[in-house]
Length: 153
Image 1 (cartoon, rainbow, N blue to C red):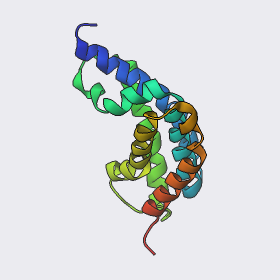
Image 2: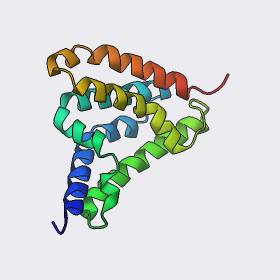
Image 3: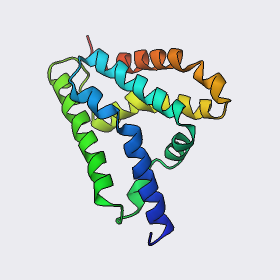
């Protein structure tokens, strides 16, 4: 590594890609809007809660990967493929009227922002205690995301 910045950026994208690996197949299968939201939130909650050290790094360094232009290209490409899958699924759901038409960054904030907040709070707790809360949290966070993304009546 040529610098600490390059090391952090590479670690960031390596962990981010591991974190996101299960999310792409969920939306690539083109589930209905509600199922896609529930499965996506559930996956993210469980992965983050189940990987406390990587989660702590990712949630404390959310933009570390953008700090270096020397991140290995394959790490960036993996992330870009996932973003393309998410964009495609969201646009299909929005075009069909199943999801509110919002900018991508707003949808992401509504979909996973609250669960990141919950996970940050739980990572400070004993893993066994936090794990007992995962099912209820995943369901409640998915309900909240679905409500926020539901198109206006």
